[in-house]
Amino acid sequence: MQNPKVSILIPFKDTAHFLPECLDSILAQTYPNWEVLSVNDHSTDTSLELLNSYGQKDSRIKVFNNSGNGIIPALRAAYAESSGELVTRMDSD
Image (cartoon, rainbow, N blue to C red; front, side, top):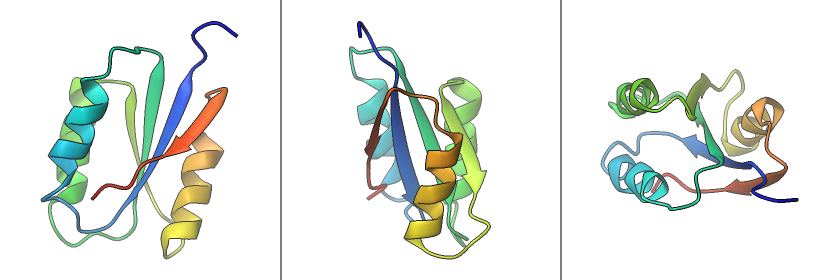
């Protein structure tokens, strides 16, 4: 398995203050074969707008809304959308 795709699951809720550092750290990686599956868990701050902005700049960053409520449904939603051979999780804060 050479250069497998890595799916990075990021559930988020009201973490706009921390998201730029989180996403910039992923973008700064030298390994290019990844995707971010971020799931908005009913944020009331600017987190969703921020993630959408990053997603418009890099197509590997995808944004979804949590149809459930809480981190477990958000992670399940992200996992269902993942296409990587490897899956990891990253907290937005």
